[in-house]
Image (cartoon, rainbow, N blue to C red; front, side):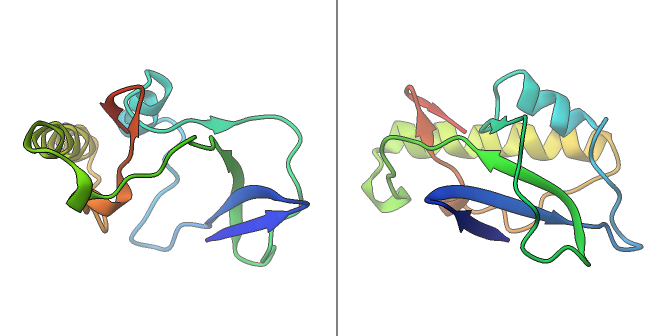
Length: 114
């Protein structure tokens, strides 16, 4: 769930349910640290929007330009599909799976899909 405070964008990650587990030390999170996914800032963060369900608050990196899959050329669509496939493969190797993995949930940053 996303929310704003004083013009800044934040994302609240809710506590895991019985089907989910916290991803702190998972392969997909290590992939994020390696730059394969969008980054989130660390440091002083505001109180969550819904504290009763909150697991963690993140401050996502703001991208200077948002594009949409219907604007991408074939090579960008291919890059996005391969990146999504690699993230899914890493997730499966750690007993996890992507949810809502559409091209609309990816963006290009410095010419690479994130």
